[in-house]
Picture 1 (cartoon, helix red, strand yellow):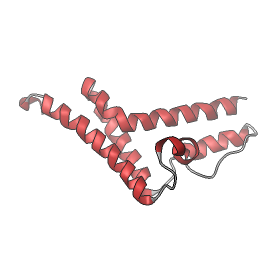
Picture 2: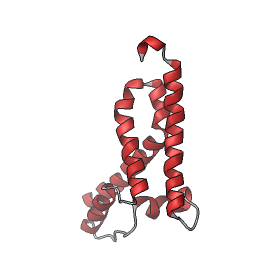
Picture 3: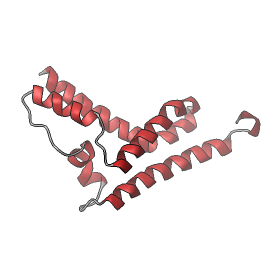
Picture 4: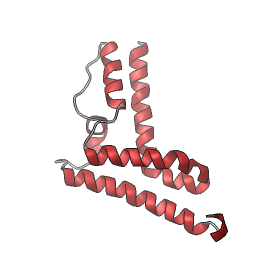
Length: 123
């Protein structure tokens, strides 16, 4: 039972991480020191998306599910849980690069506004 709970916790953590990667730049506007956490997380998210690798949280979740007597899954977290919501049917490498570009653009917009807002001497 503990393994099943932990697997569900990993899913929630994974989803929270994805939301933070995509929208965390807007939190940085409110709390600028958060950039020290957000920028490496955003870089990791873009790297995973562009390289086609599987995030390390996916095998952890699968291991916990197997320990709980549940079936794991072969695809990535995004493909398993979010594909129907986030990506259109027929995911292609071009679409993945486009998603990574959207993450970069959203964060560039957020950080660009933050840098413009700061006084010149504070940079």
